[in-house]
Image 1 (cartoon, rainbow, N blue to C red):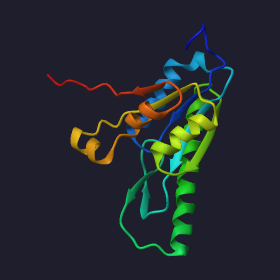
Image 2: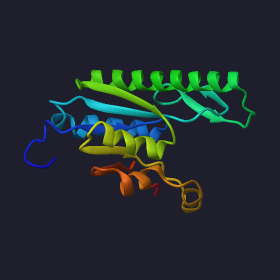
Image 3: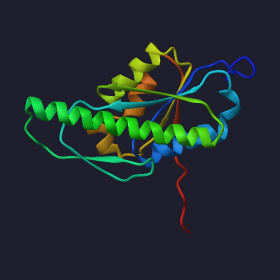
Length: 171
């Protein structure tokens, strides 16, 4: 990081249930451990607004699958509570991974679209470096759905490092 060791800089890793997020977190722990000794590593998870979902196992402990469903006040409250539990479980698993690497971590979660929630958290917590994993969506899917990492690169109020998982070439 700039000006020597940069040990007092605030670093945030935004994660979800994907392999690429797990890879980005592990990359930070393997490559930036000495640069994040004064400030705890901030781990961020965006809680999507209430929608239908099912939870199942994934690399960081849990994952989501969506299906359409009509909303009632009770359903929205229940869905939001499920999102909160999902985020807490994901953050706790990530915090345990950090602790096993000797890195102090602070966990943060907010409700909202991941793109804007991440950028808002960067500003709110005065982050100096944002780190994200790259999902590697194809050009068409990325054009239709948008890219969280691309949005953050363009809109975050700090430098953004997008960690891309190396592609293995088969001969």
